[in-house]
Image (cartoon, rainbow, N blue to C red; front, side, top):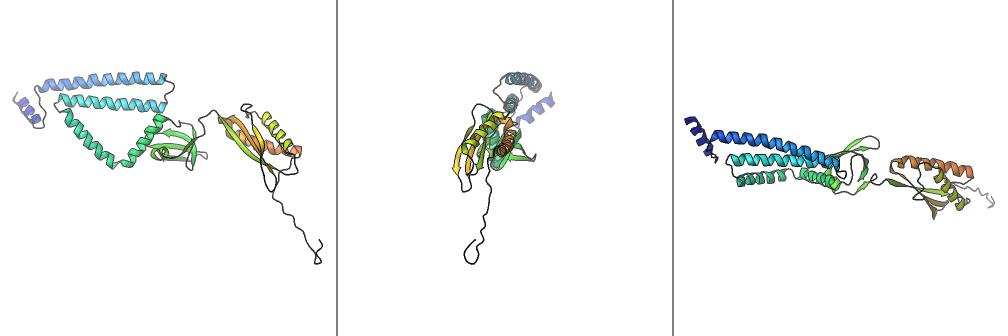
Length: 279
């Protein structure tokens, strides 16, 4: 009993009062066991509910579960410290001071974390989307709290800080189900624009990757020094964008050649004058 009293007196030096040390230890153990079991059950139910929610992305699911887990652990620690006699006010003060110091030291990293949270919450893109961020273009491989990883079209891997993504103009090429393939096609002034337009309409109708609705847009864009420039704006499924573009470029050239539509190219006319001024 004297040993227990000495232990109690030692704890009192740190502001912790033990009326009954063994009862306190048993209470702390009970809080830990019951608390962790309860937290695990809550997390399992939360994961099950989030999986049934179609509009919540997997990345956001993981973030919500992790936040709930951390919050639960903090609550357990606070309950244990309160049971040991440490005031909640003291805990809040220590955490506040530590948080301010950490925030000052990790200012840039916290900006990336804030950017990651904005990406996860607002979801401007998801894993697998083709996006443009500044000069970089690639498919999203992974989204983390600090970095987003892209696989470039040539299969190079690039990591971009989330803070940079959050403050940049971002283009998501995969968000909509359909995309428009734009082409500018030049024909010579000796060719008939109406005939060329009819050929473009036929090429679009024959293409399996080209959609009938919305209808392709075809017309004269401008008149250049060497010929007439036509616009071709055809719609396709987003997944077929590149193949649809390749098809149009190849098939339009073949069809124009078959129908005698001349595509202009740089030419130079040279005249030789004799001394008397005659050619």
